[in-house]
Length: 50
Picture 1 (tube, rainbow, N blue to C red):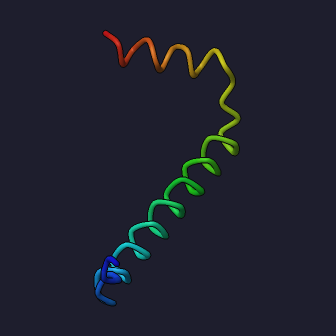
Picture 2: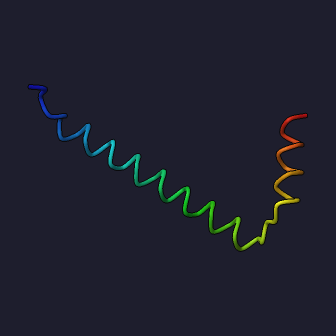
């Protein structure tokens, strides 16, 4: 059997996951409150391609 992860490492993984989820939630909130529509998103993606 595999040994369980050390407690410290597990805590780090949990913190990283929480940070990522909070970041995604914040990003979604910004996108929604700015009222981004598909046209704006398309333009943004095209500018990234250039």
